[in-house]
Image 1 (cartoon, helix red, strand yellow):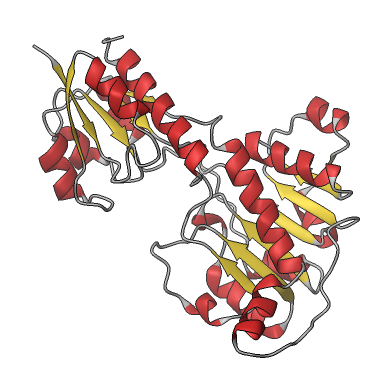
Image 2 (cartoon, rainbow, N blue to C red):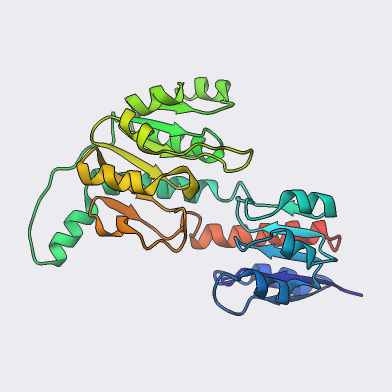
Length: 309
């Protein structure tokens, strides 16, 4: 009897057929989410309840969902975050959880740097002005010689730090378990969280949501920051108090904010009203190249884990 695989991603194989061809050539039966959007719990249970493996996005895999999947052996996440999965239930059931952490590093780092440039050079302001028929000029700021604080010096934080150092920035970082050797080799100074917030011109968040990290950049943390500083968050929406950020942008305490992730998605909140923000709909890993690589790796991980290759 062939094992069954369900692909929960609505955009699977959109940028290349290789992952589909891998499934077609394997000894499995497979089906793909055909709804063109993220699945809710009831849909996920209905479509995947008899499957041995799932190629997953960020749809919910809580206890109710996992209990409705009696033969499930592996959830292979196409991406890095696995906080949408009930790990305790998965562990008790012997369900293997896989992800694709290395593929996401470069696209997230590049979006982070792009957001910084956009805010410093006020690209949105100038674009909107030109579109409205105005020839207005507003001075921006150089990235070179800015002090950038990296919150979370993991894979992505390290890549962002490396890129910014090469552009002439001073980079400091705070991490619960910093890689001291790497930081020393790459000229990154490890500092305490409060010191980073007080001294940095730009704060870029690259924290992990695993391990019970409770950090939130809220009113108290923003009060420590320099007037006119910039915040970037391309990690998880839970790390930023959006109401506090809105107020700080309105008063001028913050000069700009770039967010790719939000506490609730899709985001439709008041930050959309402001001109000194860059807001993107959770697209940090969404490049054609990286998406295809993630899907290929997630498919390979799944087929290995359920024992068909």
